[in-house]
Picture 1 (spheres, rainbow, N blue to C red):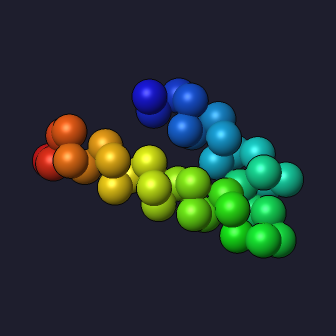
Picture 2 (picture 1 turned 45 degrees about the vertical axis):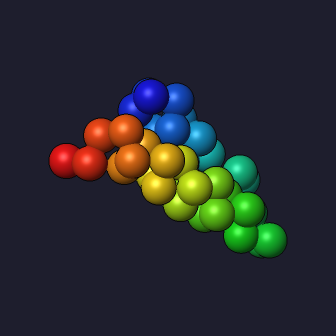
Amino acid sequence: VYSLIGGFCGSPVNFHAKDGSGYEFLGDIVTQLDKLNPQ
């Protein structure tokens, strides 16, 4: 999971999209993962 999300976040075009979709995507993923592994 880390390598997939890290790869996405390392892409300036996708992660820093002008519409904010990259940040929204990361927030959604972190929220979902926290429910499964709340460390």
